[in-house]
Image (cartoon, rainbow, N blue to C red):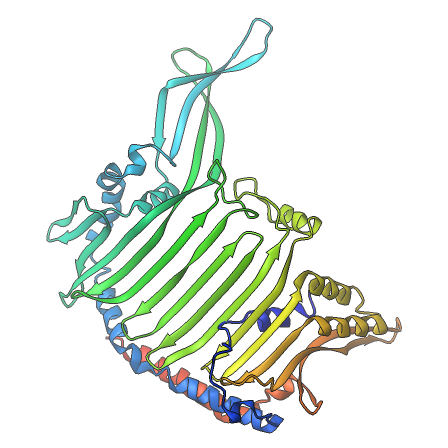
Length: 468
């Protein structure tokens, strides 16, 4: 997938569905000329640039500089020490000794037939804390750390909070809270062996360090950073994982997930990601960026997967083996839908009914780069599987189709060989074909380019001018 996939993936990764209930207007369904479309797209770009002024982020920028001034406070190092000591002691994870490194002591012995066997000494059990286990422990989200004149005070609580002041002495709180049930997902285990000679017995004793790895995923996690009681940043993660295996593993062919992430700023900007995956049934991924003016960019991919093999995510999982399984089991995605919306005015919407067939044809294109007739034939074939077009506003009229086109990339005169490649072109209602490079020529989009260059300079001045 070297030739066409780069373009296809970038085009097919769409966001936001064009609703059939949207109100149509005659202008949006009028077939536009190529020149008119260039003018329309440039107006959309200029409008989008004007909806993201740097002044929207003045309060957040100032808050950032107020926070950056407290990094020199050495007492912050005490937070890490507190988490390793008193914080660990109060967490359920440590009390159950679940999901942490457990070192089991033992040694090898010979029987009467000189066969070695392992003797496990269960009286010696040690717990080893590592950075990984610290992260797992934090999934319990409990405990308040409050900055004082003498350091940090810790108290038990149902959530995790860091309470402190910025350089202006404003009250700040970094908070992480969870809600709902947890999915305790097994990620396998790590095991290593080592030995040392016991100075008392003179025997060589072997040690096994066994680590069971678990990831606890709550239904909802909220991370917020507030100033004087008002959230400046809030991140919400919602995830529901079902149909785990009996051992707690996530099975790619059987387990289901529903969830998403939303980043919200106090200036009205929101960035969200959502997914819904029902194993071998439905799959959808979507994202959107919006602010007080409305939706700026949105993106959606969906489809009907089938044939995904039963494989668990554990220490033995291999991407290569998974790829082989997928190919051997005829895994596929039908009705692959994609939609990209910019400023609610420019939309690229497409569908591939049989993604596996589409990719197999693409492989045939790549294998025949030196055979003009076969190469062109496969390019024409792939266009039959791709329904991708450009729409404007709420209109249902396809203003231009996106297709693949073969072209001569290089020619070896000495070997008498030709090398063919693929480019994406826009096909208009009158049959005119224009490559993306020719259509988006900088001379035809001068005003849009100037608008974004001015926006970039505005943000550079905004950031540099905000430093004290």
